[in-house]
Length: 256
Image 1 (cartoon, rainbow, N blue to C red):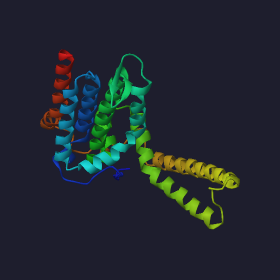
Image 2: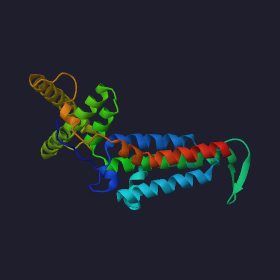
Image 3: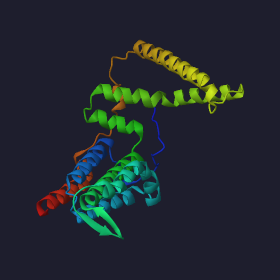
Image 4: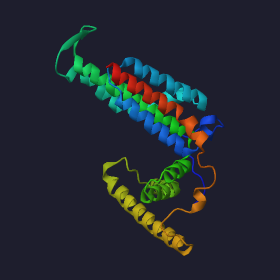
């Protein structure tokens, strides 16, 4: 279980951000996001300052803006919802480019776009600089409930196996003339899903029994912790961004 697993968002590098222990990066991302959420929506300057912090961390981590922005498209559904708010909102109306828009709707749209985008970018930076295995190790060091870290571990460990099994079943089905794009072949597709579920269940049972026979007691092996837990100096370095973000949020609240 000690083998590491990469993911599509992780970017291999030897930057100072990559070298930080995972637990300090997780805490820094959470505190930064909370500071952004707590900032009044009228404090436009504060969101600009947050963007500068994100850009500085991205540069330090050697993560390019094109990579970040392309992955940030995951928030597109929320962007579409935000765009609709100025037209659907109530209250006072203002004229923008010949359109009468809701003032509250405009503020609401800005609030969703600014805070959502900054939160997504912070999460992407965490994923780009931390492997999935290290994320789980960091959560374990932060005393996250064992049941969550175990489920995440098993999911990451055997997800590739199940994906490969599903791919082989699909190739076998297509080679026999079956194509799930046709409506009358959905029954065969559903049967394949059921077979995959049974195979996954049986494989999981065999894995669990094998783990029990090797001394598994319900907790991840201590070797997962390894050496390299965050030192006081590393906590101080990682605290730079969340402390600055918290200061910006506090100032914005006082001034608003």
